[in-house]
Image (cartoon, rainbow, N blue to C red):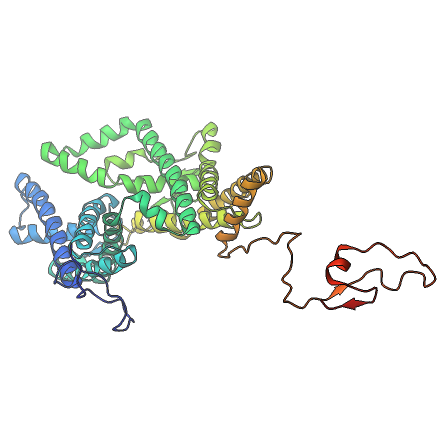
Length: 482
């Protein structure tokens, strides 16, 4: 693509600075607006089709075609995790995270298209392309929030703007970065320390996600009979069963996030005064939703005794794995700094899990189910400590073994490792001076004679001249200049 100087300039730059490259005469903001409208339109079209299928299969009195369009727009906002209020019920914030995959995938493709159509070539300019996509996308979400408001449901306008903007900025930015180069090349463009933290955090999250998926699946398999009973009691029919299955699949990411919170220790709640944690569970009546059959009912131990220790050890295993990869992906670290980087990996993991816990739960009205899901601050704090401590210890031990192996290596390899340590701290090593290197004669130096004044005045034996005496004709005085 040809490059043009009509691209968008970064904020605060002067007229002589380098502009963001643009592949066409169309400004980058216009390209982002086109992509935002296309992503939003495709998502609404898909959801409208699903709502039409449900409306035709089970027509609802008083819900006409306008109501179908409003319902599709509301589902689109729910896919961006926008809560809404029901008159007489309260706020609904317990939303399926699986619906985020639809707008997220569309924004991913939109971000790649903006980068390619706009001629953006540098990784540093991808943020401007993502911003050009996120701003008009948030405006579309605000318009849909106002248009879908009715006497039946009122979506939150602030959440519509903020959540859609953040989703477009994140998904569009990642898609745009992927459009620049493959993931392996992008990882190589990151600084060494940032790359190590990214790799370690991703490894810890991968272990926790795998363990949470396994725990949620095992719990559902153990309560498979109750799952079938609840599903049969609803008698949804063929089309209703398909829509119910899609709804349960959309809540699978929520279930995995709850299982991760369970392994961390704080657990989660499903109603005021309830808790599901490794130490025990206490639940009341649950809604007739088949996926909730995986939760332990009543007041008893949540897991068998022989499984409690393996479940509680998952965060520490994740931290150890993350700390190991943090050290392996980083340059050679100093002995005392490696544990700090391991703990930073755990703290970053805790922050991500805290945000995930906040989005995985929410209220289901103003009554007993006003508290549903894990506590965001408890999950973030506990995860940061558990994963961080394990990652710090593992990173320190792994880095010590690494430095020990480097010390036992041949001199050439030790020199290479030393240069790597120096470069990791942003310094440049000066060339070493040879011990026998002759100093420049045009420089003034003072040489001391350590034996000056120690010889006996009557001693006629003169010590043999040394190298310094021969070179600089030094006398037996206190000092002399060359």
